[in-house]
Length: 160
Image (tube, rainbow, N blue to C red; front, side, top):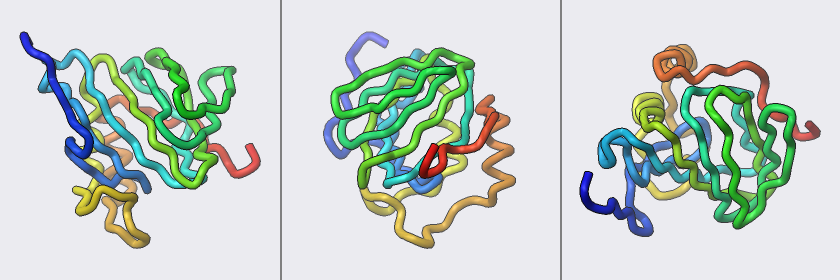
């Protein structure tokens, strides 16, 4: 890689995954596998299971708010906040605002393959509509194993 990689507003591969719009802004193959940059648009109360993976993950909240839990830390992420979750640290979050928009950078790249394989191509640049198709749960769980993404606990509930 000898040039910058640019992804403008509205650029990227769009996927609907687990109730969110996932936009791969910079795929790993564009930067020799060094990292991947992914944008997430998520609805209120979305919370993934407590999980960990082998990639370091750096977040920046662009819009909205989310309660974030990583290891024994808990904080409210607001616009402009950034944080890093090292490889292997269990983490989750819950969207507190109507929607939240954040960017995550994964080092090294690779996890974007999970979103490509377990997601559904988004036909709009918006959250998936109610009733949008999704792959069978057992297939998503199989793909999570392939990408070393391990769920180790439940998502945050509304009062957690």
